[in-house]
Length: 610
Image (cartoon, rainbow, N blue to C red; front, side, top):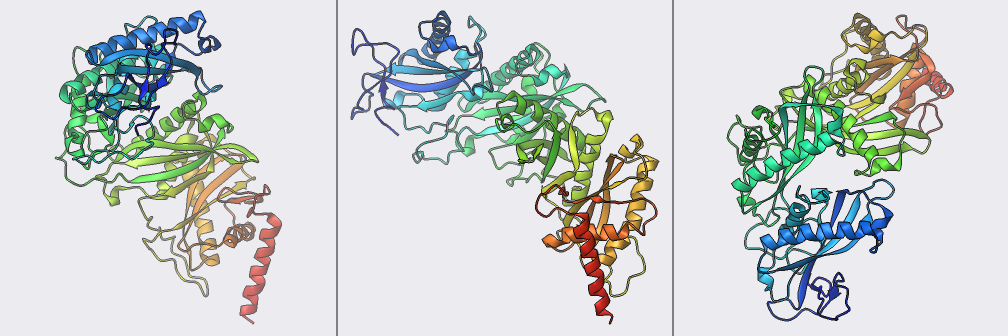
């Protein structure tokens, strides 16, 4: 890793006219000391002040003022931490960050040590990075500098320590102990007792967010540094979100507890210790404002150690095995907002705003349904559906606690139904618009047991559906009914209108699918109703992998059934299977094609009896 650039000498002695802020490469010396002067090159994202073109002009007043502030804060902090080896800090440049998505300023600085410092006496990269975080986050800085602590990266370094805050460019050298992954991090969540949630806490630029973030991180750092002085690095705030309105107005915080990348796994604390330390940090009566939390709410969501991930503080003793957190992966199409490239940038305001909405809806949906077993939701990403459709595809993970037994995990169809019904219920106030038929399970920890349909006399040459625990194929089927008007009580699964209509559809269509697919059909479940006369969404379960043509056959079955059913009507041209309708996309179903297939199926079956 050592190179002419790595062992950069920032020397003003090279020339009386040299710019003291210029990094001048030198040839490494073949001794245990670094020649002339040695610099670490770091970058950091400044949330304040916001970027302006004047910051790219080294002669402007804005540039000079910010340069003086950064170098002063940097020099004071590093001088205290490394009094005998540190030389000075030198600003390299300011630049815009993620233009035009954001207005933050990126600063690049050199942290310079005396050339007589032995390599063995130079600090590790994560220590240098954390010191810069502390220097620029000091509330005494004038003007106030606000940085993103997780943005600080070591771009170049004179030491053979892996650059842990940036993607490593070399293979770390062997160590005498087994090191943990670079910057091992515990992710925890906790519920504040006294902090009432407000929408401002989802805006990282609001005064409310910044004040609570500062108070929480200060309490966190103070406690963990006293507990783990040699291994703890820093705390980071992930987000604030509301907890289960309208029952209460509590705020949940998600934080990261980061340890130095050189910490051996054996030296990392167990999860229950990390959780209990957070309880003690935030429940300290000297905190201002009051940050008291519900101790039982603290959960370790992710951890670098093979210690059972549990809650604090009343949890069983940790075991030597990791309790895998059962996770369902779901995708859904959001009809609003329309997809834009900004939704692929995790730092953009558009991404953060939509992420907050989705996770808020997801967390509240499943925490309400499964208060004892549900853990948290995570967003996997946003993507475009296809060039013809402006909808936004969202993929998310629904995570349950690792100690949840298989028998206590919900079926895939129930997980889908929970989300669809919750989002479509206006009383929840999620402010999300989804295509109900598009919600799909991509991966799951369970193999849904099939529900045996209502017993009916078997049709000739048919086989009764058998109960099985094998993996099922789920077809999401949607059709419109025109003869009745939609009413709001059809949004409520507990209403008489909903239960009656769902029962009628299941009762009339189950024998239809049984007869058409005697060896593969297993069951049918109504998922939701929505406006447009009445849009009916249901899941049809099969035991074998259907071919592409089965999508058309499912439509043809419904077309054929439309003439004989009595409890509702089916508009043939509205039928879709797995979210694909007659919009020109491959495998879409047309009424003519489905009708032809139905006729062909009838002719072939007639020949068998001749």
